[in-house]
Image (tube, rainbow over all chains, first blue to last red; front, side, top):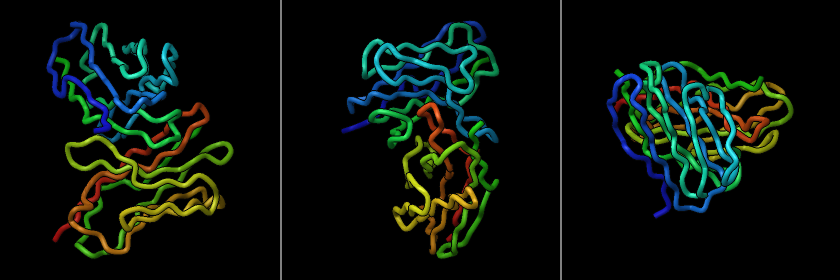
Length: 113
Length: 111
């Protein structure tokens, strides 16, 4: 089944404790992206990647890191999480760019205390 | 910069009512336009899209027409069902090959 998977689905952590949210797709897509969804703000892009080893900042990259060492994986790293990073996070992938149909993962709900 | 503005919700309708969710955009050039839908507890999924002026995207009874003159891409459905209850996001293809989303409109359909 073609899908985007994210882990964990739910995470409660404390300020400053490094964490990684994994994202994997099995559709051989070139493009991958991370978004955060907050009430009243909609979806905002954090980082995106057009291809392996190519990543770029989205609208709200501060406090986040990403890497794209393999085509299928695009982990999101929070080196020192803070409460303002409490949010619902989505990973998405598409064939070659953001203009192609994006397939979204189920989301990761992160709470930083 | 590029941006999308869509009507604020929530929108509450009775089953079989007519639905319109307004969406306008600001962009240089002629971007591709999209509607994504998010059902409760799920990620977003593409509902329909249009890539040039006057194009009409359609899917599952929903339609939207790319209006260059009014920079709009309003979503419509003639007769909504309870199963259409979801959050709807308008989006445009940004100049950097990314998607720029509106804030979303929550639709609740009552039986």
